[in-house]
Length: 365
Image (cartoon, rainbow, N blue to C red; front, side, top):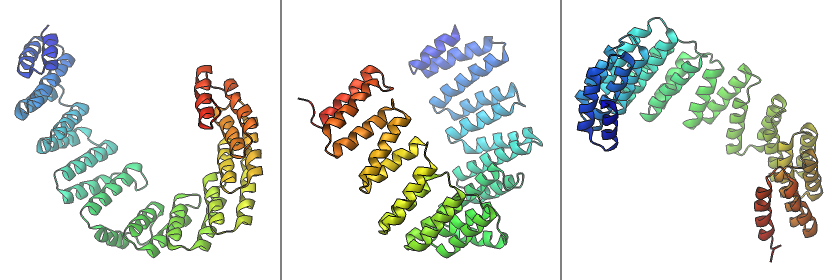
């Protein structure tokens, strides 16, 4: 068939012959969907030859077969953007805006895409205006409105006008909500206004008392400033609102050790052990902490508990064996590693894991 021949010519990069065959197939085809497929192939061949006008002619024919089809318009626009035919793509988006009618979400999404296109065209002010127009269609808390705000920030950042944008936000947002305070905080932080950033992150944490993000950002600023006492207080506040997030507790443990307060560090590790008594992932980190800070008895007890919790877990077996090896108890290390053969690994995987471990520790001839 003409389609089959055309497809072979495409593979051989014979685009003129492929086009001729696809044209013949198009002339014979009556089915609308199949006509659309042929027109796509013709357009692809034309684009491959950089014959922009002919490619657009095929896509115009494709859209004309179903002029009210939003997806076809979008497809056409995206193909045009791919080949940097921006003005023509803009025309398709304008038609798409008419098709979506009163569907506010579809209209906002289309305006977002138009804004993105304006950015590609180097028309930044038009892009910002379009993003703002899209924002007016959505609630400020909607994910798309948040994304649009980030796009606006991106334009101002790229054009080195963040100070101008911040000034407009300060004037507009006299009493910022959570999302606005977080955005202002991040922008203040970015341009080095740390005091203002702290103020905004603290405001955000009062607007959403269960949110972790502003508290983490406060900690990062305080750490940069070297204000250890305030960092400790901020971590304790964070742990109170997120007691099931072990990573913040481990971060505080490391801080205590760094500041030489071993007593508080060990006390917090004990609390973590009790709080997460049946969480193997936490116990893996605990074991590592105990080894790092030379708490070997605690490390051994933790590795043994991990193996008890999941005796066939190859990672736990390897960890316990490594502990024995580092402690000079080679016989116990080997005895533990051999248990890999009864682990959750397939036999060939177990032998493949065991061999290199023994070789790495000089235990094979």
